[in-house]
Image (cartoon, one colour):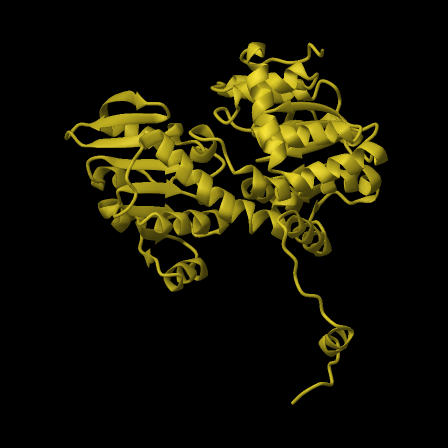
Length: 419
């Protein structure tokens, strides 16, 4: 057993194994790739440092990477998203892992740095904290890193900015930008898991409530749809005109946050931008308003402003803090403003992460094979892979689709055809 780990309690390993086995039963695509990889060993000789939420689904990915021949060292990409039982199970299996729930910020970066101790040849990231740590503190390692992958929108934005500034030191695949990731994981996964986190932290009745969704990107769209499905009156706030217009045509009310703050019962931020809910918004909220975030970082809700307005704070239930304002109103903040779907619940369902993590696996295999020939920029995976992956997913669900005939194929490419 590896001793290169630090987790909350190794005695939790048996419970963690059961969670992982449940996830494996719901992730047939990744399991099929694992069986193929056992024979082909596409990652043999690779050392992969991973920084991604330590969930049961992530454990399935870690097991698959190891089955494909890689050595793996792992940390969580958020201080509150690690499942301690899963982390213990991975450690007990010999995975080098540094993760526990409730990390301080210094501990968070200490864990990331420990995954770099074994000098990785590939990196896997969710939020780009690992990649940025390499670039800012361990730049001497960059020449030996073939490439990396990035899981989420926020991280891709950071990496594209680094590349545009000429600062990216190795190629990175934007896994998030694959259609089988952002149009499924971000929409359906975030929608369901965010509502799951809100319900676990509050046990609130959603039907009839005014539910304010800040941001109508893929994640916000998924949350809005699920909230409406539970009977909420959904309000969307946006800064992008086309996104706001889409929300209107999807049947939602759209207004500035200054107006929404006065009528909302439940608020969730999904923008990736800081200071979406600030002091003046808290000042106008109803007594009992519930506030949470599903963006990657905890900067969307300005808790410093709320602290200044409050005369007291207490944890009223798990992942739910009550702020008592000076005028007697109460505002409830979930999961300390961090990702409510992971800090207060278990993250996305296994079935949707099956495709996201299959994309991660494909991207790492591409890098292991061809990464040394790539330029130092952000790449997207080929769209053909999305179609192959979607077809494989459909087949595991017992569903088939039509196929174009030869005549239809010819028609599609016949530019002379008209009326």
